Length: 396
Ligand code: NAP
Ligand code: G4F
Image 1 (cartoon, rainbow, N blue to C red):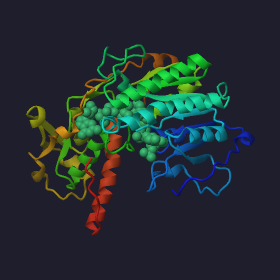
Image 2 (cartoon, protein in one colour):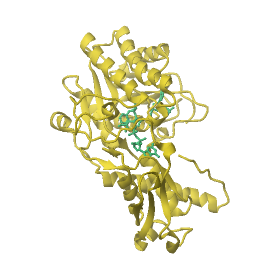
Image 3 (cartoon, rainbow, N blue to C red):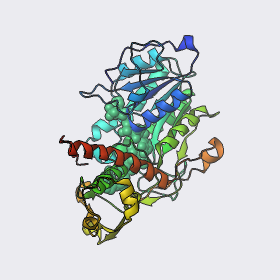
C-alpha cells in the first residue's frame, strides 16, 4: 500500500456509523477493521509514518485512494502527538473510537520505559481529552485496549474484573494509567469509555517476536530444514491464549452495551509455553520430548508421524531419520525478563453472561491456524531458496 491520503469525511451524507481505530496496522487493528467494514461501518485508521510500508495486514482491505466512496481511510498520526490526534478526531467525528495503538511488547518495554509511558499511558489521555475538548462526550464511545498484564504478580486465580492489579513491567504500569484514566473520564464527564481487559490473543498475523508466533514460525522452518533450533526464555510461564478473531468481536460488543463498563475477555484455560511448543510441532507430525531443567532444558524429537509429516512437507531437505533425536528447542536466558508474569488465567463469566461471549477457536484450533499459515509462508521461502534467491533469516 502506498502512503495514506487526506481524509474524505463523507459519512454524514452516507448515514453510516463511523469508527476510528488507532493501531489499525497491528494484529487486532487489522482484524477489527475487517470486522467493522463487514458490519457496514465507515472505518478510519491512524497509522504512523514509517520508512517502509507497514500496512501488510490491511492491504487486502484497501482500495486506490483516488476512488471515491472509500470505506477505509488512513490518517498519519502518532499517540505521542496531541494536536495530530485532536485534529483527526475533529475531522472524523467518530461514533466509536477503538484505542488499540501501543508499544505492545512487554520485554521491549523494559528497554524503552519512558516512550511506553508516553505512547501507551499518556496517549490514552490524549484521546479522552480530545473527545472532551471537541464536545463529543455524548456522541463518541471509546474502547481502551487494556490487558491481563495489569494482574502481573497475580493476587487471585482466576482473574476477574475485581481482582487487584499488580503490574510487573513498564508496559503494564503504563497500561494501568490508561485503565484508570479511562475509568476517571467515564465517571467525571459521563463518557461512554470502557476497558476491555483482554488476555493474550494470537493469530497467523501475530507479531513475529511474541512467543506463539516465534514458535509457529520456527517449528515450520525446522520441519522444512530451514532452521536448526528454536531458542526461548521461560518455558514455565502460563498464558490464557485465545484467537484474535474472536476477541475483536468483543471489542465491538463492549461498545454496543447499554452501559459503559470494564470487561475481562479470556478463555478460562491456561497453558505453559512448553506445551504450546509441543502442540506446534505436533501439527507437523513431530513429537517432542523435553529433558533437563532450567537453562539446561532442551526439547528433542522423539518420533515422527511419517504419513502426517510427508503430507505437509512435500519437499523436505532432511530425511526423517535425520530428525529423530535432534535437539530443536533450547533455553536462552537473554529472553528472560527482569520481572516475569508467571500465570494468567481469566474468568470471562461476566462477558459470557452479559455480552453473550462465545469463542469459535479452542487452543488447538488456534495452533493449527497459525501452523497452517506459517508452513505456507516458510514453504514460499524454501521455493525461493531452491530457485537461487536469498531469503532472510530473522532472529526473533
Ligand atoms: P500490535 O500488533 O503490536 O499493534 C500495535 C499497533 O499500535 C500497531 O498498529 C502499531 O503501529 C501501533 N503503534 C505503536 N506505537 C504507536 C504510536 N506511538 N503511535 C501510533 N501507533 C502506534 O498489538 P496488538 O496485539 O494488535 O494489540 C492491540 C492493543 O491491544 C495494544 O494496545 C496491546 O497493548 C493491547 N493488548 C493486546 C493483547 C494481545 O494479546 N494481543 C492483549 C491485551 C491487550 P506499527 O504497525 O507502525 O508498529
Ligand atoms: O508472547 P509474549 O511476549 O506475550 P506477553 O508478555 O504475555 O504479552 C502479550 O500479551 C499481553 C496480554 O496479557 C498483552 F498485553 C501484550 O501486549 C502482549 O500482547 O510472552 C508470553 C510468555 C512470557 O511469559 C514470556 O516470558 O512467553 C514467555 N516467553 C518464553 N520465551 C517468551 C519467550 N516470550 C517471548 N516474546 N519470546 C521468547 O523467546
